Image 1 (cartoon, rainbow, N blue to C red):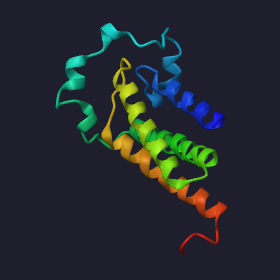
Image 2 (cartoon, rainbow, N blue to C red):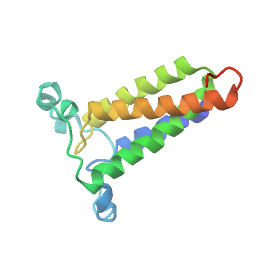
Image 3 (cartoon, rainbow, N blue to C red):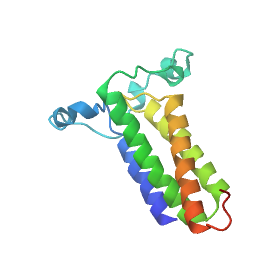
Image 4 (cartoon, one colour):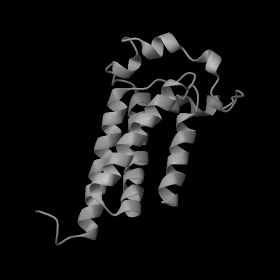
Length: 146
């Protein structure tokens, strides 16, 4: 359990990174930042409106977009494996990953310079599910259907 919780803390720290543009990572370290949520900078009107980026389909033609999605796949593949190692059951592992994916996107919505998207929750859920099923098949080869 502690490995899964530790990995969730890593995901939380990565989500708290304000204004994250992966292709400009070197420039990020040249500016001072703080990682606490500043309630006064939260755009509550945007979070609660239907024009929230959470419901938008993003542009897929940028390098940064693909690097962000690869990062989501990597961290939720690991989270899926760690939660399965913790619970040893498929359904509870998937439920933990889905719940944390929603929590992570809510956290990003409250982080200055970040946005949350429903597509990220879907990607996180699918990747976690696939890796949980792979771990289950590896652990129980006789109980898995072919």
